[in-house]
Amino acid sequence: MIKTINITLKVWRQKSSDVKGGFESYHATNISTDMSFLEMLDVVNEQLTLNGKDPIAFDHDCREGICGMCGAVANGRAHGSEKGTTLCQLHMRHFSDRDTIVVEPWRSRAFKLIKDLVVDRSAFDKIIQAGGYVSVNTGAAPEANTIPVPQEIAEKAMDAAACIGCGACVASCPNAAAMLFVGAKISQLALLPQGKPEAAQRALSMVRAMDALNFGNCTNERECEAECPKEISITNIARMNREFFKAGLISAIK
Image (spheres, rainbow, N blue to C red):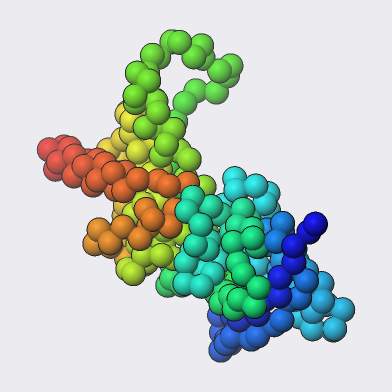
């Protein structure tokens, strides 16, 4: 038997960054507990559309916890209260009948609000463009065993590479810092042989880009680590700081 619940949503509605926004309440009835949070929003939007009202704007794509597109604060928690879970993976069975859920967008000066729950996260793209890549010759892929990588190092690099760039770290940080995101992107390349030739320039360029885009600084509050849907460790922030410090010394010597 399918269990259903009735909930009240208090959703942040704002037509654009230039218009004042506010919370609006909606009653969602007969919501299946098997639905994901985004599927619940789909049902609410369908009813709003049928009533001739503007549906709630929210980001989504794969709905499998891979793309990093979805993201909103639910009851004060980025992606909701479930650990290691994106908003699209959060199911309504984690809520109770007659619950009130407050939903709002990421809050950060670097993430300009577009509409309702949608924010512009292109600042992350600019940080990646500053140095989150390796320069290689084109052609056929090299034999995997040509450059041996110890298993421990490979696993650390893969753990860092799990970052999907959703922005939950920024939304949960009291300083709106992007250091967990940048630390993960620097770490995944700095740990591998292919990333070492450009390691110094990468660290300098990405950190400078992060600062120029008005992200805050890390004060080791660890909210980012707690709310990250991929459970990225803040040890990557420490590695980023070491890479940045080493790059500064190398630059000074030159």
